[in-house]
Structures are given as structure tokens and as C-alpha cells.
Length: 331
Image (cartoon, rainbow, N blue to C red; front, side):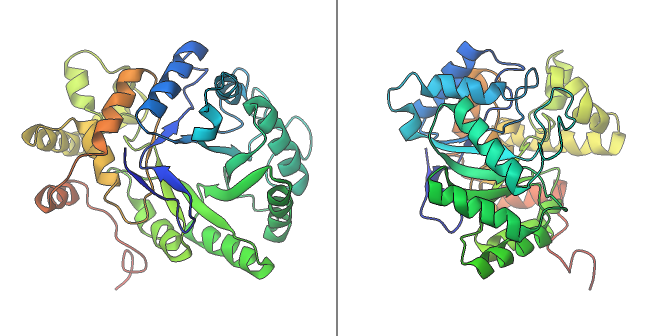
């Protein structure tokens, strides 16, 4: 496994991030524990979750991670643990009561204590804002975060699904307080969805945030969707995002060209998509959310792939990005 610094911090993390959203809804506790053990064996030390993960009930994913930590063996000490706050914890996603969601100081304090209990740990390494809260001022948010840092309950703060100007706004407010501010941004970014290159990545680079892309395979679309469709497999490829894209002739042609390119170079499509992200400026590591151990093995192989300039150029031809702002929309 290869490691890098998380943004401008001194924290060393693996170039792959273990996503846990499937733990509970799709992967039972025993298999989830086995995947986390395998991740550690492969050198993956960066685990990502959220308080709302688990569906039935929300919080179940954190509980699964907590029961794994409770097994001991240095598991907690080896992991850089990231979780998130924002969403309500009710089954239908609606607020159970005023101030039981979003980023008020009251909810941040309540949510972090609840996550610590479920995770069976005394601290969270990276506490991420799952979404922007337009009604909570940054002065209030940073006051709450500074208290949690002083109490030893969290170490760093990060964002998720922020616009570039949100990153700037948050970190300028933190600077006025003498606080560290955001050290990471978790965003939707992959070969097929490159809008983050317009403003989010430049803002992250400027403010020293590590970028953690989620959905690196774009819902399975970049994982060999057409081949799996042809072979009668790939449940995720037949519906949702992949199904909509493949139903469009122009986009299907684009994905076919991508799969043909991967085959030409003897690469698995999913591993190529992950390896491409690892060449992008500011990217710390993509989040991989395996349902089974074999998917983790494939992701780990991507870390060692060396993509040449010719291959990278061809990928840009197939999936042209927008480029940074303002050139993306102005002269």
C-alpha cells in the first residue's frame, strides 16, 4: 500500500479509503468484519463512515465498526477513522425533533457523542460535515468544533459535498478564529463526472484540503458495466445510474470505448478508473465500498498501476473534463 499526507496535515493515510456504506444494508456484520480485517492486512488505514449509514436502523454501520474495534488486536489504533454529521437519524430521514439534524452547535455536540458510543471509541480522527448547512453560521460551527478538539473527541474537521466557495467561506472563517479549518473534502468525482475540476479541486488545492472522491466507479458504470451486461451479470449495471446512461446511445458508445481501451491495455475497467483518480491533483484517495472481499482485492491492485501519458491522454479524449473556472465557461 502507498501512503500520503491528508491535505496540509501531518496525518499519513492510505491511497485507498475503505468506504463502509454497504455494512449493514448489504453486507452482514461477520462479512463486514472480515473485509475490515482484510483492509488492514492490505495496508488500508483510512476508514470512512457516517452516522446515517445503515438504513434500518440508521447508525447500524457505526455499530458494526464499533463491534470490530471491540475485538481489540490494535484495530482502533491502526485506523484513521472518519465519520460524518448532518442528516437526521430517523428511519425515513425526517427530523425527529428540532435541532436533531444539520450543523447547529447543539446537534454537533449531540451527534458526536452518539457516534462515539456506537463506534466504541473515545475519539474520531476526521469529523466531516456531510452537507452544507446554509442556516448555521460558520462562527457557530467552528466554536463547536474547537470545543470538541479541546475535549479530545475529534482531531480534524472535513467537508463533504461542498462547493468551492463553501470551502473558501469555511476556511476563511476558521482563519479568523485561529482554527485549523477544513483539512479534507469528500466529493463526487470520477472519469464520467468531472465537474469537481471546475472549482472544488482548485479550492481544495489552494486551501490545502485532501480530496476524497466518492463513487469512483460512478455507480458501477466504470466497472465494466457493458461487459457484465453482456455476460448476464452486474446487477448494479442494469438499473439506476448505469442503466440510464447505457440506455443512451451516445453515452453507451463512450463507455464502450472506455472498456475497449482498458482491454487493449490489459486492465480491469474498475482498476483503471481508480488508478486514474490517483493521478489527479489534490486527490488523497478514492473511497471504495466493497460488498465482498474480492472487490477490495481489485481496488488494492489499482494503487500500483502506472498509467502512461498516452493512456491518460486517451482517457481525456473519451471523458473530456470541463477544466477549471473561469476558463470552463469564459474566455
